[in-house]
Image: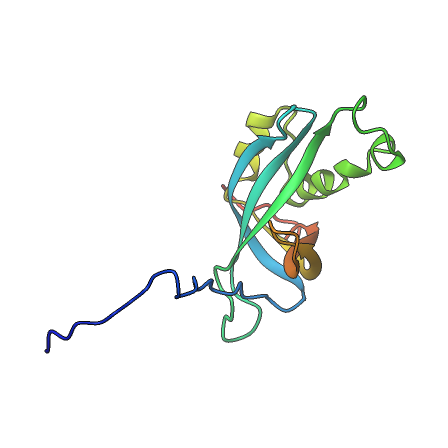
Length: 158
């Protein structure tokens, strides 16, 4: 090995950001709920479960994207005094929560119990791609999960 000096101006070298790998749209992908965290906006008027799902088997026979993580915010509370549109009045903001609970057989009536009933459970979900914006407001495409359903009617042991 040689001890050759080099010149490097850190201001001239751009930061490299690894592009996020998008998973192709997939129906009924087998997922496991790895982690659930209770979160809220600054005023506490909107609360959600920040839920990490991992792809169990991948999307094809070779297991492509196996263990890929997906993060989904599942709303469980929107203050009716702050969120007054029909979407909230008709409780449509809770439909994803209802679907998720039904898919894993959760019956909890409080957040702490619900988190316990969700973690380590397996279910099916559809993987979609949707438009989004990054923190700087630039357009991008991201994955999301929809249409949670039970695996063969059996609830995975947690």
